[in-house]
Length: 173
Image (cartoon, rainbow, N blue to C red):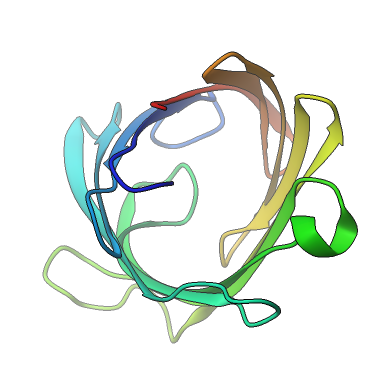
């Protein structure tokens, strides 16, 4: 996201323990990004934030740390650190990649896992306005296929590559 932008996104998937999630993000000036996660089950709100420690420069990736939700569709609080590459300059098609680690926590800060879990994500435009994404949230693999419609994006979300659901998103200009 660019400075000053808002992002609204959501997912509905009966295979998710949360059933539905809505995320509202804002990136003010600087390296911070703040958000809210609204979960259908349990009916709760989670505060989230990211801080970009380093922006990508040439082939050196950006480095981001944050607090938010860890594990897609479950709603567990967590912390993470990722390295992120915008691959578009290298492969000549809109694409990105991230690698990192995450840890699920209770609201009181107790770890829900033995240690840090691996995080991975890759996204590429496969046709004009159509993107495919694969991600691993530390426990399971998921995929999306979405289409850009103006400032919005709509598509299918495959939780664990089994349960199909819908995703939507809108980003301010």
